[in-house]
Image (cartoon, rainbow, N blue to C red; front, side, top):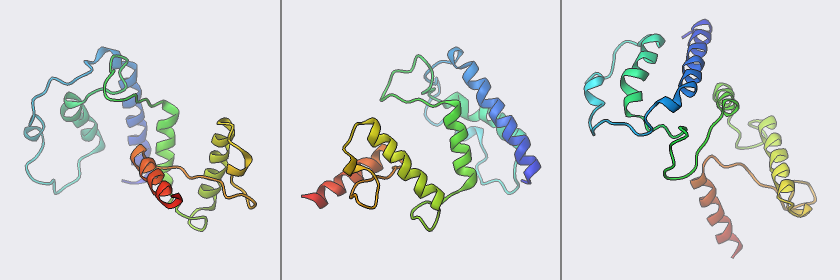
Length: 163
């Protein structure tokens, strides 16, 4: 895929998602498929040639959507609260597109420093004491985690270290 095809597919994908959210209230929240529904809809063997992005979008409706639980639907009240928004989708696109590996300052100064500022914003919003902020004279600070499970694991590691 070259940059022009990326632009076309990107526009089509965004239109697809916008249409999905515009019409989500009309979809049944839960799928009505039986286990194993998907296998007959796709090839038995890995494709040897790429599919066009147009065919991939058609497969979304033909293969994927029939088996979707629509977590963002207003009528979905199961498991735990979830939500997304158009700004968060654009953020995900930018994050994936830039493919930043931000595990240290050297790998991405902008990523590391933005994370520090955002963690300070959160600490201030929670009215935490100044010693918990990032800074040269502080042992405070924090870091963003990729998931609730990762954050829980990190909390357990910190608790283990501090006891």
